[in-house]
Structures are given as structure tokens and as C-alpha cells.
Figure 1 (tube, rainbow, N blue to C red):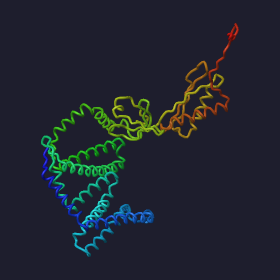
Figure 2: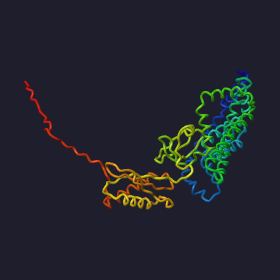
Figure 3: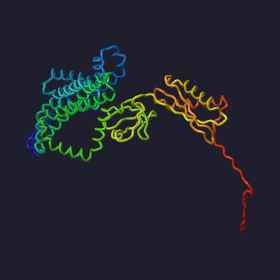
Length: 439
């Protein structure tokens, strides 16, 4: 570790002397009082402004950029009022006394003004976390620059280092890399969202190919952005060879399933065996594929649940895809009648009922077969085709309800088991009691 304590101590001593010189001056307390008074007035004024101004009605019909500007200014109305008050106080102090005696007012004015400018610039970012992070970091840099300590802080952060192989790590290098990575990842996210919108609008690509292209673009832009950020801070990529070797060992030992799921996801997107919107059955889980990710697919069951199934399971296990080549689905209804019914009449009645269902395909006629003679009665199998497999259960229920009503109307009985209990000879056992004397 390379640590230059002399430079750090000199920097701290310089800051301490500057603060001591300001605090001992009576003008410091006058400026501090003006700053605190301005802050209190700004908070009170902002509360009154927000209570009286309705942003929706005020900006109705305005262009988008002007509405965004008004929204940011209304959110920062406290700071705006504070800037106006500090500007007035600073002007008055300059007219009344020496400029050096209003230094604190100038610093407060510049800091508040810098915050407003930063909020206006970051208003184009939609992520609240990124906005807060970028705003605070930029404001700290602006504050150090305003008070004239930015170069000293940079030198102090660069004076502490840890050397790993051929790589020299310093707090300044880590901060620069973090800021660049944050900016690069945001830019890659914006670019990938733009490319995704273009790909999803293309009607020549199947859904699985669209998902595959989107994933490849996102991954490629992310890798490229990270490489650019690392090179921009002066890190030689060859110095990371030892880390890449360790990462390879980690992938080989601890990340086998993650890599397997990633490769399986690429295979699924390439062979188009499943795609978003397909109705699938995987083990005990059934539903429609709502999303395909690099590690898993999301299957919506239709009752509010979503099954997150690893991609590897879809490659290695049996998968029933109800809409792989054709969405037309056969609905099968099994029922029975007693031997008093005419089986031809029953089949004609069942096919007519199935044909009248609104969701059945008119191009494929329903069919009813007598499948078995049993001790309880005759068994039938009614089949009909529908265009969407997601309605399979509801269509089956509607057909069975219609069959029940038709059987009641035509006097056709559905067999059910009847049990009789006969007692032959002897007498039923009689319960006896034994009195036990007490006392």
C-alpha cells in the first residue's frame, strides 16, 4: 500500500486553517444567520406555493420539455426561493461592505444554484436511484470546486493505493470507474430499449427470434460498455488476466447451473420449441409462457400464480406444447348412460350440443363414440375442436352442463352405484350391560 501521509496531513491542516479563519470572524455569524433565515423563509414559501399551484391544470397544453422544466422547478421550489434570497442578501452585502465578508453567502448561493442545474440535467433520467446517485455525486464535486478544494481532494484520493499485480488501485480510480460504469450502463440500457422497440415492431421475425436478438444486443452492449469504461480510466485489460482466470475457475465450479441455464435459454430461443404466448405443460405446472429470460421462463397459470422454470428443465425434461404447430386443441368429454337409453340417440344429442358451443370450430365436426359396456351402463367419448387451448376447461364444463340438461329433458339417466345391505339368518347382536355394585 502506497500512502503519502504528509500530503494528507497538509491538506487537513489547510482546511482547518481556512475554517478557523472564517469561524473567528464576526461576519461569519451574520452570514450564517442570513443563510438560516433564508432557508426558513424558503421552506415556508415552498409550502405555500405547492398548496396553491396545480401542475396538471397549469401546464395543460404546454410542450413536453416545458412541462418537464416546470415540474422540476416546482419540486425544487425551496431551492429556487433560497437562491433568490441569497442573491438579494449577497448583493446587499456587496453594497454595504467588503466582498470577503460575504464569502459564505456566495458559497451558499453557488451550491444551491448548482443543485438546481444538476436536477434539471438529471430530469431526463427515469430511474429514481440513478437520479439521486448522480445528483449527489455531481453536487459534491461542484461543492469541492466552489470552495477550491477539488484538486486537493483528488490528490489525497490518488495518494492512497493498493498494487495488485500490474494494477494500481486507488480510491480515485474506483470512484472514476464507478461513475463511468453507472453512466455507461444507463446509456446501454437506453440504447438497448431503443433497439428492442425496433425489433418488436418487425413482423418478419418470430417472437423467439425477437427475444434472442434482444438478449444478444443487451449482452453485447453491456460487455462493450464495461470494456470502454475500464479502458477509459486507464486500466489495461491485460492486467485483469489473473482475475479472468479466477472467474473461469469459479464458473467451472460454482456457476455450472447458471451457465447451463444460460446456454439452454439460447438453445430454446434458437430452435423455437417454445416461445412467448405458448400454452405449455411442464411436469405439474401448466400455463402460458409470459416471458423468456436468460436463466428461466415465466409461465402464468391463469390464477395469479407464475411458475419460474429453469431453462435447463425445458431442455432435459418432457414438455407439452399445446400450441407448437397448431393452436387447435381437441377437447374430450367422457360420460355414461344406463342401458335404457338408445346409444345412437345419445351420440346424436351429444354431437348437436357440442356443435352449438360458441367456441367450437365449425370446420371440424364433433364426434361421439360408444367406447365400452360396463356393469353400470354404457360409456361414451365426445370429442370437439376449439381454436384456443386456454379455454379447454371452460368448454368442457359447458358441454357437460348442456349434456346434463339435455339428459334431464329427454329422460336419459346417468348411472351411479347403488349398494344394498342384506342380513341372512341369525339375529342382530344385542348390546348387554353389566351392573357393578358400588359401596
